[in-house]
Structures are given as C-alpha cells and as structure tokens.
Image 1 (tube, rainbow, N blue to C red):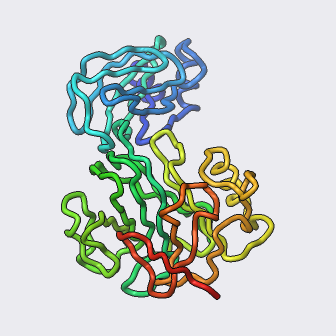
Image 2: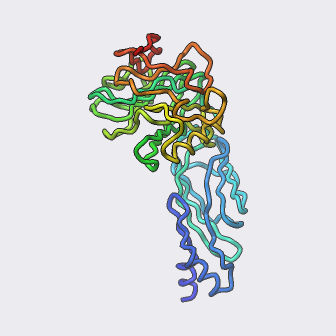
Image 3: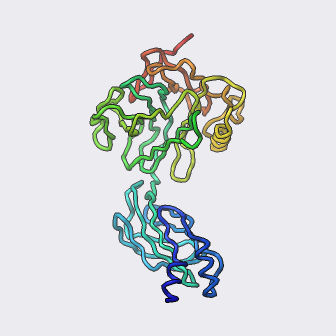
Length: 335
C-alpha cells in the first residue's frame, strides 16, 4: 500500500508546461524521508538540428523517452539538464511532442508531455515591408514581410501588440517552408473567404482579394480585428531575438498611455529593432503616425533605403496604393 501512495503523491504529471503538484510531492517526500522540495520540470528546447535539452530542478535519470513523430535516439545524458542526441538531423521548425519519464535520486518521478519546435538555424534575415491596419470586406488587414536572404521560416513568430488588451498579443508561428531572397510573404490577419489557404507549396494556391500569385500568402483563422492604428509588430526567432519591428501610433503623444506599450518599446530598443530618431527608446511621437491610413492607403517601407529601425524608413502610400505581395507603391499620401 505504501508503494501505491508514494507513486500517487510523488509522481508529477506535466502536460505542455510546468504543472507540478508541489504540495503533494513535498508531503510524500517528508513521509518517506526524501527531499521536501518537489521535482520540477522547467523547460524543453531544441539546441541544434539533432540535439534536445530538458531542464529540471535537480538531477534526474531518464526512464523512458518517446517522440511524436518518431526519431531514433543516439544518446541520452542524464543530469539536471538532460541532453538527448538523435541519430539524424530533423527538418527545421517542425512540431514535435516529447513524452519523457524521469526520476531523481530519491525516486521522485515526473512524467512530461511537452510540445516544442525543432531547431531552425536557417531563418532568413527579413524586414517588415508593408502593413495594413484597416479592414474592408473582403480585403483583410495584413503584414507583409520581405526576405533579405534565403532560408526557412519554420518556428518564426509574428507578434502584434494592440491598443485594446495586453493579454491579446497575437502570435503566428510559421511551419517549415523554404523562401528565397527578395521573396514577399504576406500574413493576412483574418480569413473571410473560403479559398484562402496557406501557401506552403505553390505561390498561386490561395484565393482571397488581397492574395498574390507571386508571393506566399498565409491566413490567421477567424474574423476578429487583431491590429489597430496604434500597434507594435515584431518578428522573433526561436531565441526570442527580434528580427525586425515596426511601431505605429495614431497620435504623436509624448509617451505611451499603457505600461505594456512602454515595456515593449524598451524591449525593441534593447534588441536594436526600433528606436527614436536621436537613438533612444521610441515614444508614440517616434512611431509611424497612422491616423490617415485606410484599407488601401497602407503603411509602406522605403525599399530603396537602408533599414534605420526608425520611423524615417516608412511612409503612407496614396489611396488605392496597397500592394500586398508586390513591390511597394512609391507614391506617397499627402494631406
């Protein structure tokens, strides 16, 4: 009976993240003379194309490990950080689930079922190139990316911080797809037509009013507004490094009226992704002023200039000047 009680109390099941049952594990450990600190799973990440690390609160030995999809394991190194080497490299940025059972020296166990992405060391350099913040059915809002080098998008994430709720920070994570230098990728921010499909194959597969037969089109499901005239858009790699950012404000205020905007401005400054004209942390006055944008009058990057990571790189194009998936319209809107 004691063995059964010990298993129920000390075993820790983690589904996707750290869910520990700390009080139960502590009580069991005290009852049977073990550690009073629960055994915790902390993190999982792919560190190379064929190596994965699992972090725990103290040293463990692996009792079983399986992956979905299946991969052959070459070596497992036990410890506080469990290192797993596979026999072959994995395609960059694919979704994987690990099912791992580990045990510490006091026979406390933790069962981890955690999803993660394979390592992508071939992410292209890129810039955010055009942004549409307004919806006019069936023309959707969109974020256009321009590739500055060839690579693979697998595991790359797009964030949108809007002016409605800090917790509704939109994340779109790309599945693996090869891209070429100077190729355009358009992320449409809602789906309102049945023939709008993600183009992981041919460039002309997707329908939809703003889709392009010469660019890669991807679509966020649903019809909820995700971007506003005051928004921050940024792209992160698997190490949370900003590959590029664009900051918009409807009004040139002296400072952000919400703390999460100020925090994001500081993060983008530290990452070297967005700054004021004088090289400091960007305020609304240092953003692209978006008050006069419409569904066809979009925010465009000057494609002929070097990226200065400031609002000087940007302009509002003329009415009917939106060009998702194509080179930007050079004609600028004037009041």
